[in-house]
Length: 117
Image (cartoon, rainbow, N blue to C red; front, top):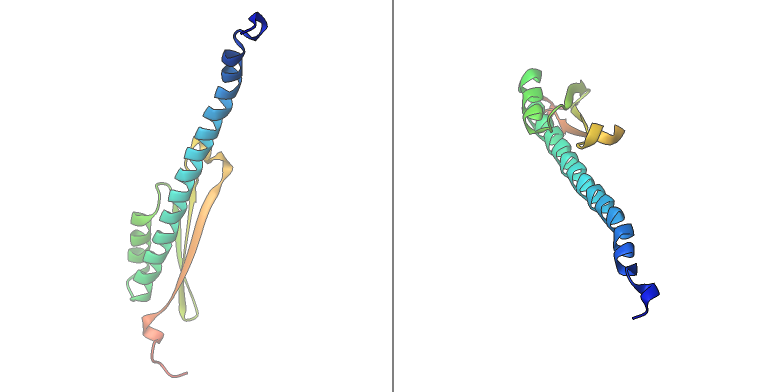
C-alpha cells in the first residue's frame, strides 16, 4: 500500500455516511406517511359505512376520527343518494414537511336502496 492512499477509505466513508443517514431518514418518513395515508383511507371508509347505515352524522364523524391519524379533520356530507366522507391529516414527521394527506370515500345511503325513482 502506498503512503498516499493511506486514510482514503476513512475519508470516503466519512463522505458517504451523511448521505446514507439522510436516505434512511427519508425512507422512514416515507413509510410513516404511507401508513398515515392508509389510516386516512380506512377512516374515510369506516365513516362512509356508518353514515350509509343511517347513523347520525356525529356518530359517523366519531367513527372516522377514531380510525384516522391524530390531528385529522373529518367531514361528512350527503350529496344526493351518497354519503361522502373526507379525511385530511398532516403528514407525520418534522412539521409534516408541508404535506397534507387526504382520502375520500362514498357510500350509497341505505334509505335509498330498493326505492323506485
